[in-house]
Image (tube, rainbow, N blue to C red; front, side, top):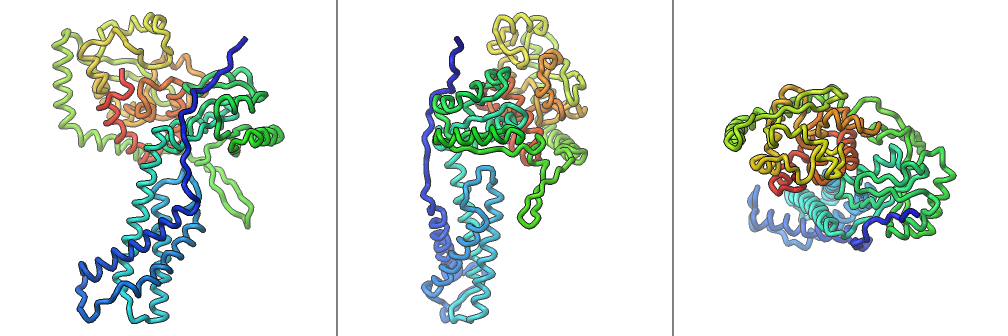
Length: 485
């Protein structure tokens, strides 16, 4: 009799903010902005001096502050700033904030020209606009930092069950894994196909079929259910929605738009009727690949003086330990399945490759995973190099040759590729990289299927900003030896 799979017992706590908290906070910040602007204009006199006869009290400015605050609240409510939107970036919030402040400033200036009050300073209003943007944006940044910290402590996390393990279901799961700051914890998935319903995706459990959905929700303390089934099964989807509602959990349905990533879809509005258009251009088209290539070469050239000194010291340490070769070239699979020799500093004994098959068998490790825990083939110098990832510095030669990039999926060996399932092959659609999403999310501790989910998420969501974020996150992960062996 099979044993029921259960996700780890919940350690999550929820935090709730009163509905009107942020509007009230924004109103308070507007009054703070007026107070600071008044101080800057009449006390500090930063740009233009104020003659004593022209010095005005603060009280006449309070009505303008009230109007300014009300205009901001109306604008922010209309633009959806106060609605919960986990996928919205901080820069998008700053844009909305700036737009609202600009509109409020124009209206207040219009009131001034219309009524010509005795007490009014246009320079003070400019101070108000700048200070308000800074304060409102800063509060949003602090909120994001606080939320990320609380979620790292298990507070504010939604335990999420995904229904469907197809392409759309895996896209949802890999997004939740790659974007932990969004606050979703995938406890597992269920599927109507019995062959994949009990197969785990890394640390995301396969929790069985759809028949016992209510029991699965209850046993795994689920907060949110995301349905990713094709629209052709709309009757089943409606039944599942009713089951989730009876179980008193939130439910969301992902639109199955021809199995496309939503970044490939643009939405137009025909008098209230949504029109979906399909963008056929790949995210990493020729232009984007060229940009990525230029960035890679530029960064390597800038770091070259330091790298050459470091290479010399590492090469000397390897040679002094056993007198063996300095470099090690291993056959790897790159873009579109094309094989190449990846160059590394040697961190193992010379005949290490011949012993791999036996070690994988003895350790029980996933043969598709690039590294083996507590590998006895690693030398003393090699352990230091691997812990700091300095054994991979010669990969820069492969980057200059155009065989790799600084950021991308880690290149597998031909033996590993032979064990791939069809969906795993998606990670070979771009140049492999020296670092990537899976490295900054746990490195060698990340199971193989989860590593593939992260790599596919990177391919579908590539941007210069994402590459910069991964590169900046790589250094602290390396220094802290996070997930290294």
